[in-house]
Image (cartoon, rainbow, N blue to C red; front, side):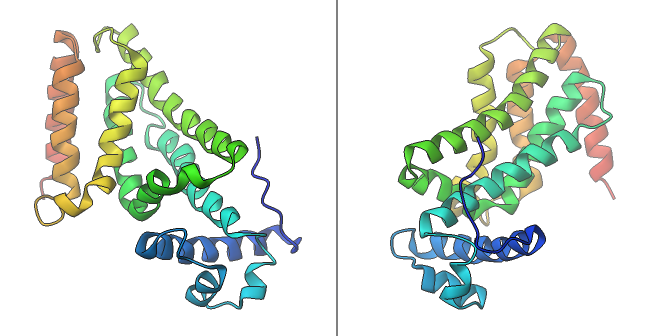
Length: 223
């Protein structure tokens, strides 16, 4: 299913450029004052455009909300596979996925929170589109978890439950940023959660492999 956001402008490069600017401005405003209180005029002003120009690239404010949410999911869909490219060991792939997932969320903290607050405001077909994209992201984790189980590195647990626990770890960095700010940093948050996940999930063989991966990660972080 493709997003049904139409544009008067036909140049795809210009559409991509302008929509990126609109999304950046809207993300700030939706986070600051909420979806309902934000107008197209507000978004245009923040982006440095006229309202008329914005309407060349979107039809309504809901179009902008959809684009904000899809932008984050697209980064997950492209960057998570890139994070594990060339890594054969399934447990190391899982570690890298959790690390990369959380760091992508860190870049999109505001948009992640907006997704939880405002996705229900989309029309049903658009909610389904967002859910489909979310499942595509989750499936990247599912595939790696299954590979870890088949290799005897991770215990045979409910894959869907574990996958969504991992998703919530990443999202938690955004959803509870008010709490973690000043208490810990991103590297420490990732390390602590990796420890919890790996100790809870791994078989004895997997636990030994995790200790090796963890030691290598510590060495990489040491100046």
